[in-house]
Image (cartoon, rainbow, N blue to C red; front, side, top):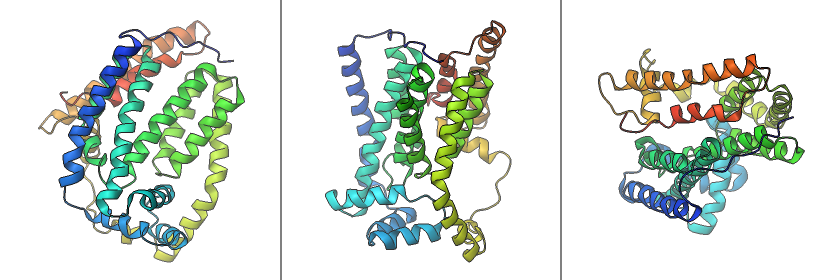
Amino acid sequence: MSTSSTPPPRGPSKGAFRLLLLAILLIAALVRAPLWLGESVIGDEVFTHDVVALPPLDALAVVIEDVVHPPLHSMVLQGWAALAGGSVHELRAFSFAMGLATVLLVALLGREVLASGAGGLVAALLVALNDAQAFYGHTARAYSMYAALVMLLLWALIRCLRMGTDGWRWLAFAACALVVVYTHYVGWLFLIAAVGGAWTLGRRHDAWRLTWAVFGVGLLFIPWALAVLGALQRKGGLGPNLGWVDAPSWIQPLWVLGYLTGVPEGRWGTLAGMGIAAVLVAALLPAMVNQRAAGSAVSPRLLAPLLAAALQPPAT
């Protein structure tokens, strides 16, 4: 069983935490607002706009033939357009709201994982100032919604690992996971990592529950997967989608990862950032070995260094 209690968060009082979080959200809004209102419209946003303007079934057919993204963002955005308007800048407002939601959820997740209100606020501030988060936090694409949903997924996972004996908590996690993978295919990487991590950390009961939850999500994803496979056969593969992309060099994935985590551009900046991330992740190993040697499951709090690695400061 996994019934470990959540320690009370250290750091500022509830009132101070809320006030500081409000200030961080204001900073995030000020960083993103000029991009939302002043940044030129990109081609991908034109595609989003055109899809959202279609009737729902026609929009779904276009997304299936495009094969690049699952349909949930377009469906949600159609509802948003019905309420707030369908121009590109009005569609950007949804991404803007999701970007602020991501900052909020990071603060709450950081406080949960680190048992520290100050830790959660620092993590939220880093996301508020992160250049990649600011850019995708205003673009009329799925990425901002996806980021917020991943934070919600991680929060649900941590709650399950700490108080996961109740079936409804695992159902809530499965629901979050289903929404994530229907928003972006990369969501499957989070689920695979979660299952692998649970088994690696020796949490057998949780690992079985997690495995069955992800298996259920996979079953519910089959209809979409079959529709996309049919579209891929009709198109003859991904060539029409990727023909404009040059073959990446070995350093480009590192550069992209460095950019997304906030490492500034520079000759050695990306490699230095990856080195710092490796050190933070390596901090898990002694505690993992000690707890496994003692015959106990590894605490969910050991995920904190991984969170820190994912939220490296822009000043790295």
